[in-house]
Length: 168
Ligand code: PNS
Image (cartoon, rainbow, N blue to C red; front, side, top):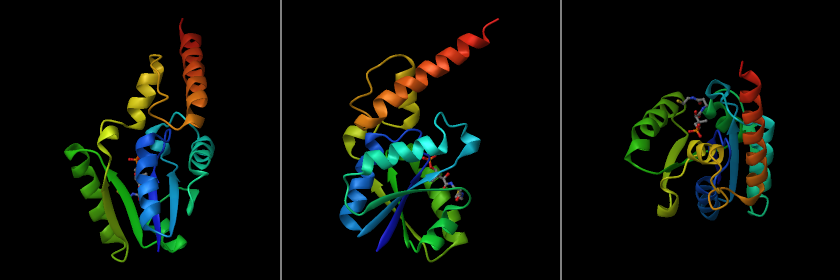
């Protein structure tokens, strides 16, 4: 059976990798789907997020990466995926995830959302936290796949340059 692991992946973290690897142990095929999420004003372009995710999962058997813009359930139907796998870190994730799961189910009752509890060591981790830590120069090498470290530092440097450039 084929399952999707969707997200904005801005950038992909070890928390995401934990969920993807565990999904790949259960399902024959897993597609990591990178949402355009332009409304979220992502740090990395869709092409960069896709590339970083592809590099990060390259060694995981049965895992592919793709991108989509639009409704996730439409992508699921197009790709013949019956299951959406989401990670749950804490109660704070639950309300939003429940709302999305119900919305997706009302749109496509044949597609099931399954929740996996994030491993305790990553229960605090999010792409937003990683971006914030990187902005202030913290070492994020224990939080993101190795291929993400340099592009993240480069993006921080670019953004700092852009901000300085804007100073009067
Ligand atoms: O990593 P994120 O940003 O929490 O992922 C959220 C994502 C991309 C999975 C979610 O926003 C999504 O599915 N977006 C596609 C639009 C959609 O299908 N919306 C209906 C469900 S509310």
